Image (cartoon, rainbow, N blue to C red):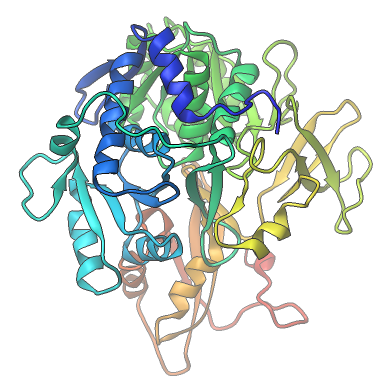
Length: 516
């Protein structure tokens, strides 16, 4: 297909950046201990080529999936682009995944090679010891010699800075599979092509007005689309500078914004609220920020307090991993209309429809629908799940979001409610049915219902209602221990309520809206 990406790939993009912007600073990385390391475009391209050569040496074939389980760091990006350069496919693991969640992704994607941080060695030893699968484990960012594993840094540094094998790859080839929580019990793998990732960068350049002089600071997890498609790729397509802070700290964040002379940053509600709780610094308005990319939701009072205190303007946006970009967005120039999420962005269409799929009149609440091109401006589909793909993505390019909203007479869109049965906690999407299935796997729990409740810092907290099997009984602490052993930390309920009965619909389903 002919479009703005053409047949450009992540390999050709990096080769071009190395040649044309080689001396320009690509990455400033500040780890959780405050140590800062910088790479120019030419230097990082050499690290990518070394990584690619290492993967070739490990026998990684074109189209093969490789899992990467790391915190946000340069090595994560070396793996992403090193695999892309040889036509392989990276599968990032959420840094909070526990064993069952890892095993699901490993099996779904038929993974045999993983690159992990030293911190996750015990986790993957447990996976292999259980006999679940055979894995070739490579360890990055290790602070000591690990005899049982291949050391990424040592082996990478032995490689040439020139790519040893130039495989045939195209823009429609898969570059990555990003797993994101859905409304079912199991997460779905969103397929991203080389074209998808490059287009996300070009769209971000249009949306935010990126130029080569911009310095984009992010604390988002590298395994998330927020990091990859709203910060990393726009930096690359604009040949700008990416400032990565490995771990968000409310007490340090604004100082980092000022010190690193960031011109653009990303924020979620938890960040806005925790920053407002910090002591006022008389110098905190002495920054270079021109834009704060923001993702729902905060109140008007919080927005105004934040903008007034820090002397910045929030750019409200709406999108998903499936849509790649924040396809509905505040304009870069001109009036913004809070709490509107903006107007539809360039190259996309959007509409509000009723339950029959008919477009509704302005002011009427319905489902937000987005139109693009699968594999180019929208995800290619869900990995290994054609049925789920057909449910959300039509042949003519309309993406069902299952999010509720409305549009006014002037074309501004407004977000009303999240996807059914979804909880947003500190930027993480949580599928309630997944947690309910885990809870009811306990022999003493007959039924469970999980909802989101308001949290002044983290958007929402997780509340679980549990109904015991007759004659059985657990304490709240026992239920929490059961959860902590089987769920990532961000999924563990903050509140447990033991009930004797549930409100139900006429079809005997639990009426969750009455629980709220």
